[in-house]
Amino acid sequence: MTGADTACRFSYVSDNAAQLLGIAPERLLADCSLFLANVHPEDIAALTARLTGSAPPGALAWIGRYRRQPDGEIWIEMRAGVTAAADGRRRIGGIMQDISQLMRYQEEIEQSRRLLLRLASHREDLVDAEHKKISVEIHDQLGQILTAALFHLRILGRSLPAQDKNAAGLVADIDALLNDAYRSMKDIAASLRPAVLNFGFATAAEWAAERALKNTAIRYRVDVDASLPELDERCATTFFRIVQEALANCVRHAGAANVTIALAARGSDLVLSIADDGRGMDEAESAPGTHLGLTGIRERAMALGGEARIASAPGRGVTVTVVVPNAIAR
Ligand SMILES: Nc1ncnc2c1ncn2[C@@H]1O[C@H](COP(=O)(O)OP(=O)(O)OP(=O)(O)O)[C@@H](O)[C@H]1O
Ligand SMILES: [Mg+2]
Image (cartoon, rainbow, N blue to C red; front, side, top):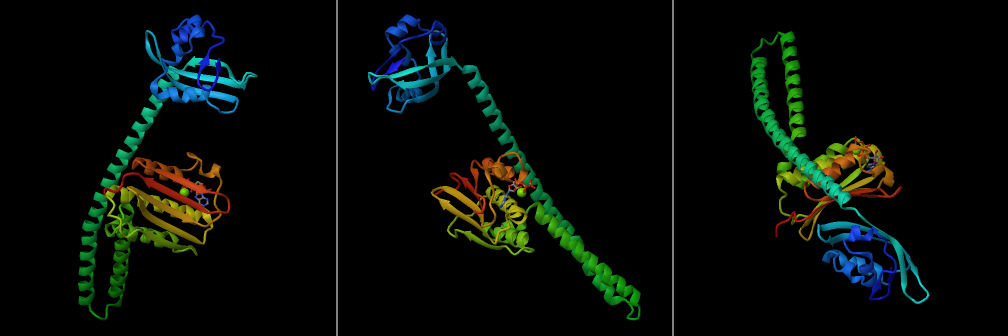
């Protein structure tokens, strides 16, 4: 095939072209536009740009839809080499093949990926709802029982004969045990569904940082745009979990001195970032699938219809950025 700025023509067409394109080779040789006219309107511009454009000689690759008579649309892949001929035209030599079956498989894979994601996100919602219910129940019911037990124990303690030191010691032990039980009950309830989320995302992020970094020398800053509307429950819980995972990574891997958690609006998008100034990492470490933490962050972001980007270079710290489009109704 040769191509100039505006026109192209076939100089050789193999016999198989008739089967692939549904047009006899001699007709294609006589009129290249018979082929071009059947290329899908959305794909033609990319093809003609490659065939006739001013791109330098080299490899040409194009994939597009083609209306083949009489059986309808197929997907064609064109792979060719482009050389500049002496007359100023471009010589294009290569092959075209029908990749419709491959494209169908790809679409099926894409569909099942989307379905899996929807299922995962649905399951996550159910688990979150269940956690919330259990956490409220643990907190309210167990909390009441423990508070009542402590109250009665203290009455009992006061009514013991002053000389019975043994019994007084036992009462003090049970008092301490009930207090421990109350604290761990609160911890369990909080880990199921952090009640701190009731106080807004900024407080929750602050709480998560305080907890995650308390035994480290890492300083933190929480920078949440105060003019943001309140996040919906699902978004807040997801962001909270992402912050927890990113902070855990800071503690385990970063060797950082500072970490900043920021939440801001960009147009109608919400942008959450967790940035540290630690040792950073290379691409292989953040590659999807190797570990669960970063993969979980990516999946949680996708479940909200957004995406997570992990930016880093060795020595430059790590920034996890989550962008959720159209999360703010204006
Ligand atoms: N903030 C960070 N600074 C430096 N390296 C990091 C940071 N976050 C992640 N990494 C690197 O990326 C790898 C993958 O992190 P990821 O959270 O996915 O897994 P993990 O923390 O090793 O294990 P887990 O599945 O328990 O989270 C880590 O092993 C670490 O090498
Ligand atoms: Mg991790």
